Image (cartoon, rainbow over all chains, first blue to last red; front, side, top):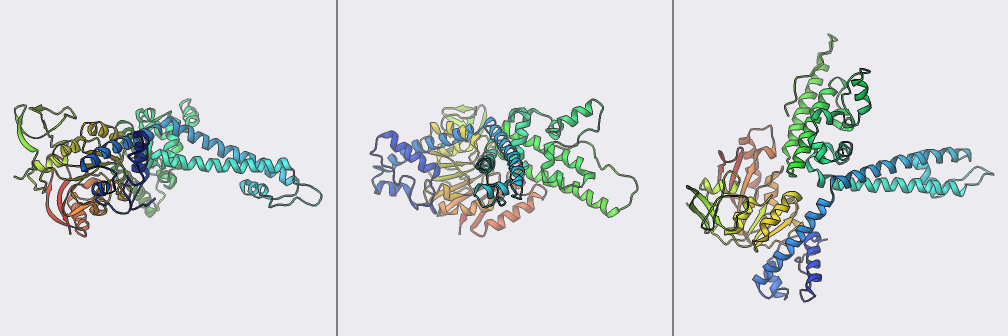
Amino acid sequence: MTTDRGWFAGVDPAEDGEAALDAGVASVRDGSTDAPADWPAIAVETGFADDEAAYYDLLHETTMAATRAAVEAAERADDQQLIHRLRAMDDCDRTANELAERVAEWAGSLGVEGSGLDLCRRIASRAVEASSDAQLDEALVDLATRAVDLDEQAEALRTDVERTAPAVAPNLAALAGPVLAARLLSLAGGLEDLARSSSSTLQVLGAEDALFAHLRGQGPSPKHGVIFTHEYVAGTDPEHRGSAARALAGKLTLAARVDHYSGERKPELDDQLEERMERIRARSAADADRADANGADDGEPGGDPA
Amino acid sequence: MTLPEGVERRSIAGDQRLATRGEPVYGEPTADGWRAWDARRSKLGAMLEREMDTGLAGGDGVLYLGAASGTTVSHVADFAGPTYAVEFAPRPARDLLAVAANRDRLFPLLKDARTPDTYAHVVESDLDAIFQDVATRGQAQVALENRQFLSDDGRLVAAIKARSEDVTAEPADVFEAVLAELETGYEVLSTERLEPFHDDHLGVVARPK
């Protein structure tokens, strides 16, 4: 909203104190304009304040209240709320897809071809016709509509997660992406738990089955859990994926700690991660160049310089 | 040495220290109502310690970008006039609120310094100074976009952090690039490395051109 007016435009100080303050707070928080102006002088001219000192007193009261409200709102967007949103998003996703399968099977029996949520959308909008004598069952249309609604709800929740994850864990969300950040928080149980985890724990979060199988002596140790979805792991060739996963886990652990203990965004973490990944990928490229099958260099250097 | 009025070198706890007059904020030593200004915790403090001429007189209108938890901004509000403090992260902003609570010409704002249109309806124009201490990439861009708040003879007083721009490059190269971009909108008056107080930081004083 661009108003080209000061925050106090539309705020009537003659109103009873609380209503005027609320209006001012809303304006400070959500308003905007293209360019600054001599607001104190304008406020006095338009009668918002008697003089400059009175204006600054009102401004102090209003910015204090607005910033307090904004900080509280941001803090209410806490890790537990984020985790609920993420899990609800996953539930909606999974359920929508299950229903879509059921719809496709049912519709197939009525001679309607197609699959997935696309089919549900077509059935819900009655853009399909059943074959000759069969009728499109109302119950089927209902079911398809429900699947579509759930899918839309999942999308809305995803948008929510994308918006709130950076407020909850700014560095983790920047490095991992908001959805993966939320997933790591969900698997760890919260920001504090994640901040207290070792990097090797974070690396295999989401691969618990494989990890415990390994600990029972029934398989190799998992190289990665849910962080596999990160482009830096999935996009690295399998030979060096372990290194990439370990490097990424190291930086994500640092990011979670900064988020928990300070809450300030540290862009240099992004750069450090990028730099590490470039080195690992340069190794892949070098391997490819060598192109000699002279035994696999496991390419795993010592510790992670966190 | 041109310290702004309201900033003095005082003998506090046996040392000659920069100091301002106000309510203590972060456990700093005080004497006779003056609070020591720790140059190691404050880039602006380091710039004054390095005797950079910031062009500040005292009583100035100030926009402070990157106020964090308010350590430096508390000293600024002690000697300056109306002071607008912009901070992006909620957690430090909560501490900033505590600092602003007993400073009635300090106006805290939870806003992103990269999008000045979200606070241009609150922050007045023709300010005497912008302090900038934002740990984000594109620090020159932030300074350029906020130039609209400065009067023609106002001052940009910025602490440029090399590592925020590019962690791999030599700080000297980063500073050169940032200054070159800054000079598209500002005339750079002086620069000074802030070691030993702050590693890989460059103090810059500039005015709009």
